Amino acid sequence: MTKRVGIIGDTHEPFCHKDYLNFCSDTFNKYRVNQIVHIGDLVDNHAISFHDHDPNGYSSGQEAELAQKALQKWYKTFDKVSVLIGNHCKLPYRQGVSKNIPAKFLKTYEDVWEAPKGWQWYNDLEIDHVRYTHGTGSSGQNGAINRAIRSRQSSVIGHIHSFGGVNYHASENDIIFGLNVGCGIETRAYAFEYGKPFVNKPTLGCGVVINGIDAFFIPMKLGRKYEWVK
Image (cartoon, rainbow, N blue to C red):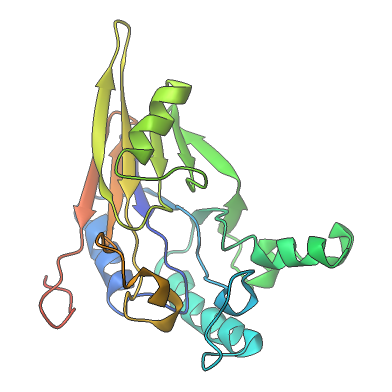
């Protein structure tokens, strides 16, 4: 059977673009995807970040409730998803460590986000010899392919919002790819205010990998009103 993996970019709920879920669903149906990976940063956790956060934004409790409500739509659309653990996902646990709270008192990601049985969290995954990881520690336009070259293994990442695309690299023995699947964020949300001065803006899209060989970045085309152009 042909393995067709659909990859959802960083969603940072509850600050995800309102059309991104439908975009991913339509794209995965078009490519007849039969396995789904979320590349990480499923939620943003802005209010509990170690960085400064908007004092006029949601409280940590409000943000968590809104994220949970948003996730119900994802759960309803996709019954089985492998979720990579992103740096934003880890924030509650990092805060726990900073406050000297033992791991036994902390819930799993599945429990925290009341996930259905088919949703499971991983630090990284290997599917058809392709490495899937969030991408923490990588940067720049060549972040994905550089990561692939270092391990000499085709790799799929998110994390780097400003770039989406795929590059191939050949040696005397093989050819590998690095795929950055972009993100699905609402760039005008206050949680991403830090990015306004940057020249490179978030690239919305998702990814598809077929049989571990062919990799595609599918951009989410946006019109002037920041609406999804189907």
